[in-house]
Length: 89
Image (cartoon, rainbow, N blue to C red; front, top):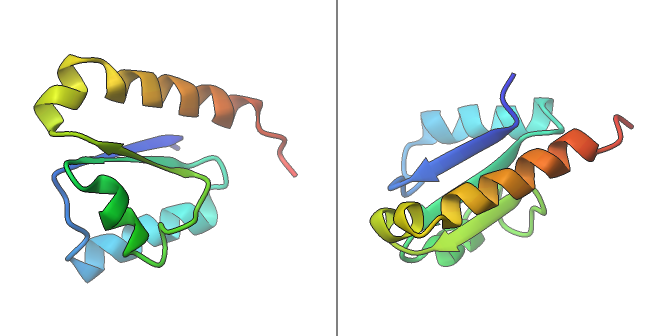
């Protein structure tokens, strides 16, 4: 089971994929999501399953910039540590 899902270039317009992501959040309490895109924080705020969810991190940058400057890597490291240290109950 994965603890971090990195979403790059997805606008959350596909209900089937959104349902899979929602199910992952509902069934895996350790799952964290990193959304990368120029307007990622706006995009996540518009999605009910993501908005105000402390397990969702937005990186407002192009994929190229976020990957090249290490922002995605840093976000994943932080979230993996957070998931590892989370109490099971």
